[in-house]
Structure formats: structure tokens, C-alpha cells
Image (tube, rainbow over all chains, first blue to last red; front, top):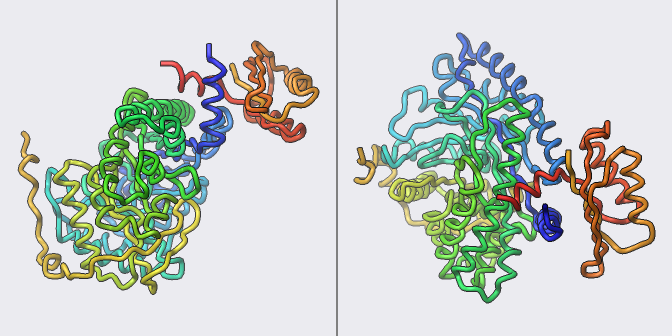
Length: 449
Length: 89
């Protein structure tokens, strides 16, 4: 029998602490949609997605109503498009088709305009990478990602060089909307195939035909729990985070099971990430401050984040039968009011953020920089993040927005993407390093076989 | 299906009558009920069985939310499974 306190605790998590399920993401394989012509591929893609996902939004809304827990986004991820169009070309047409599908079924985002080039690129893949800016500029709900490195293969620096160029081009092509195209594009090291979060979601080739992956959230719940133990030591802090993470993840597990059953799809994974939103009371930055920092970015930030990230995983793993995706704490600057305030105060700088990415679940995320940042500097930022991911055997990513025509102030993307303060960068040139190209070899511990 | 209805707000006359009346209209059976005053707020929790109601869960939940607005209380109706998932191993 449930106690009154337990019932009220759950209600309060939802009503005042912003507990929500961030996303139900349906992964759909497009491998069986490859046609003899690009047009045929587009027709098959449209038919398959609008069929498999036709009830996704309704089921999401029904579950939200039954459990009384908000499900903020419904999304779709698909097989990397570079694999689907390699034979016929026509990638831009497929991009438009994906956007049309997202509109038709009413999802918030569709991800998978992606390529996996961590070791090398075919001629077609190189060509595909250069279509990304245009694809992002002519769509509104479609997201794109590229994996350029892995622990097993090292870093493909030829691809890293191209990444800087296409981020600049995307920034220019979407300049009328604050270079928003860059907010829908992420570069990965060690990308995962079952990530439900955007912009980096794609449906890996090792996945089943249709899969449901769920991303939970709830930084506000963690912060409120820590407010109750103001004088507790750090072991108590870790224990408290674990318990809360368990409860949050159980909600995600329940939602994922129900959604998979009702949508006739396989249950994939729960992603345990604590994903912030720009509203007050939903910030990962504020959790770190609740642990005892005056401001995020202060010395101790990396240690606090390491504790948080680890405790979230430990609590969440027992609560779900399959944990996957990125699973940790997200630190997207523009999407977290605590992080935005810390940047505006001058307390949180890019160098500290980079250190934080070594122990959190993603990387330099939703970081705005000046519009005149050279492409090779962006590439070098990506190379550094890749090195952190490759050497530490974890996923890292860069979602950086050089805001066209702006070098200071901030840019507002609206909704979950929030407001990004433009951060100062180190201006010394890495040009020669980036122009060398080639591959940075895999680290010695990649050779485990 | 078993559901939990929570009613939270300023105490006033006739809250239980209004809520139970609405449940009766929708053919929802009350299995357990408890109420208390917490931090000056009236808090009532009901466990109900919806299996005899012909309405969908969304319709029932919307009706209860609407009633809440009418009487100035926060009324939520949620499947019991979310509470069990969170609090039972």
C-alpha cells in the first residue's frame, strides 16, 4: 500500500520540481527504404516513417495524461542518411522528406542526417558532409550529426577539418535566425547508436527495425532533495542523488515500457541524463551550486559534476532494465539558467567547461562564440573534445554556434534551446595543426583484443 | 484501472461532496480516502477503481481537472502505476 507521503512526494516532484520525461524517441531503420532513385528512396522513407510513427504523438499524450507526468518532446531518429543515399545521391531531398515526415506526424524533432566517418570517408561521404549546411538551412525540425572519432579508431582529422568549415557555412546560411542551424548540428567522438536526445540522435545499424528510447530529466528534483541535507557530507550528497535518480528513472522505465507496448516497438533503452531546461528550478548548474559552490565554474566544479554524474548512473542503473544513450548530466550552456548566469558573471569560462566535459555525459554543448571565429579554431575545439572522448573511452560532442555578425552579447533561440551568451575564446591560431590532416592514432588502450 | 486522485488547496465547504459526486457521475468507485491539513492546505488523496467507467482515462482526468478549476482546488488524477514504479522495488 502506498503511503500518503509517497504519493505527495511524487506529486510535488511533478508539480513544483519540474520532473518530466524529456523525450520519447522512436528509432526507425531506413535500411529497407533504399530505392533505385533518390525519388523512390524519398517515397519509401515518407511511407515508412509516417506509418510507424503515426501514433507516436497520440500515445505520448495519452501516457502523459494517464501518469500525470509531462512528456516534453516526441522525436524520431533514423538510420544515418549517408548510408541511405550512398547509391543514388539526393541527400537534400531526403532531408526535406524527413522534415515533412516530422511535420506530418507532429513530432518536435527528427534526427539522423548523419555520417559515421571516425576512421575514413568514402568520396560520397565527403560530399555528403558538405550538404549538411544546406540541409539544415532548408529544414526546420531536422537535426544532423557526424561521428569523427572513436577510442577504437582514433580521430579522423580530415573530417574534423571539414566540420569547422560546415559549421561556419551553417552559421551563415541560417544567419537570419541567429545561426540556429548550428544548434541542430553536433560533432561526436564515440557516438552512441541509441541516443534519444537531439541534436545527436540517430538510429544505429545494429538496432531493430523500430525502437523506443526514452530520455528522462529532473535536475530540479535533485536540487530540492539536496536542499534537505544542507549540512550533510559528500557521501550523503551522493546517496541522496542516487535515490532521486532511481525514482526519476523508474518513471522513465514505466513510460518506455508503456510506449513500446502501445506503439508495437521494441523497448530500447532509458537514457539517464539529467537534462536541464532554461526555466528556473530545472538547472544542473544550480545542483552544483547547491553542493556548495558559490557559482558554477569555481574550483571544485569538476569534482562536484563527477560526483553528480556518477551518482545519477548508480541510482538509475538499478531502476531500468536497459540503460544506454548518453546517460549522465548534460551541461548545455544556453539551456541551463545556472550555466547562463555563471557565464554572464564571468565565472564559467570555456576552459572550465572543457574540463567538465571530461567527466560529464556529453561535451561542449550549446556554446555560442563570436561569428568571426575562424573555421580552423572550431575544428581545433572539436579535436580537443575528441581527444578527451577518445582517451577517456567516453562520448564527447561539440555543438558550437558561431553567431553570424555578432561577437558579444547573447542570442535567443527560444524554447528548449534557450539563450546563449557569446563566450570569449582563445584567439591563438591552430591553423597549421588543422591543415595537416590525416588521423590521430587510437590510444594504446584501444588495443584490448 | 486503479488511479490516485489528489485534491490540494484552501479548505472549504463541500469539497468531498463535489469530488465524490463527480466520481459517482463517471461511475468511478472510491476504494480508499484520506484527508489532512498540511501547511494550511487541505490535502485529500483517494484511491479509485475506474474499470466500470465507460470513459477514457484522458476524459476522466480532464473532468477532474475541470472540477478542480471550478472549485479552486488543484485536482490531479493519475494512474496508480506511476506511484508504484517510483516507490516500490
